[in-house]
Length: 327
Image (cartoon, rainbow, N blue to C red; front, side, top):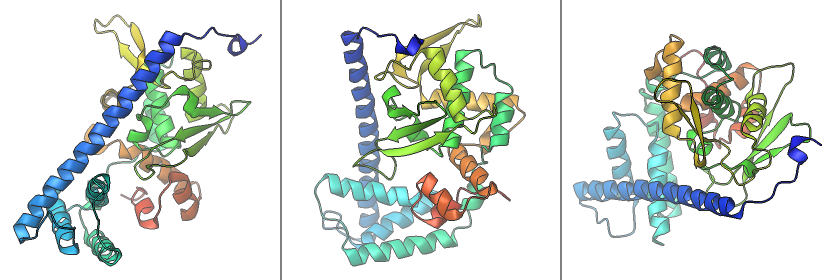
C-alpha cells in the first residue's frame, strides 16, 4: 500500500483550528482591502475639495479625474497602478451601496486614463527586471533543496513564474485542497477563488504542467514539497506552511503547519539569494515573476492571445507591459 493510501484518522480539533486560521487570514485580506478603499475615498474627497466639487454628491467625471490626476502626480507621473486606484475608489462606493459614474462618464474616464497611460514616459524606466527561467535556475543553483526552507523558496518562485501568479494570489491563503493533481502527478490545477480582477463567482483554474525529462519546474518542485511535508492527505492544511530557520545558525528548521508562509519572508529571502547570485535586488520586485513568466512564453513563440489567456489579462496593453525583453 502506498503511503498516501493509508487511511488517516481525522483530527477534528486540528481541522477546526486550520479552518479558524484560514478565516482569520481571509479577514486580514479583507481588512487590507477596506483600508485601501477608505484611503482612496479620502484622497477623492481631498481632490474634490481642491476644485470646489461636492464629494458627498454622486461622483462625476470631473471629481474622479481630479482624484486620478492627483494620484498620478503623487506617483511622480507614473500611471503604473492608476487603474488599481480607480478600482479602489469604485469599490468604496459599491460597498456603501452608493451610485457610481454614469455609463457615459465611465467611458470618458477610461478614455482619459488610456491617453494618460500612452503619454506616460516613466513606466518603462520604472519596470522591474524579469525573473526569467534562466534567472530562477541561477538562483536555485545556490540553494540546497535538501533544506526545507530552500525548497520552499524555490517552489514558491517557480509556481509564481510558471503560473504567472501575482504575489497576492500566491500568498492569499492557498490550502492543499486548492491543488487538483492529475493521476500521474505530472500536472496540477491551482484554484484561485479571488484575484485582483476576479472578486466573485467560481474559482479560476491555473494549470501547471511538468514537461518531463527531469527539468526543474513548478510541478516537479511542488511534488517534492508535498512529499517533504506529507501534504497529500491534509486537504485543509496551508499549501505553503511557514518555515523558519534556526536563529542560532545551527541549521535547524521549524515548520509551522498552523501558519501560512509570509509574503514578506519570501521577498526578503529572494533579495538575499539575488545578492548571492551577484544581482541587484533593488532592480527586482514581486511583479518580476509574472513578468518573467510572460517574457518566457513570448520568447517560446506563444501568441499574444495565448499569453493573455494564460496570464488572465483582459487587454493586450496590460499584457505587453509584462514583456521585458529589450528593456
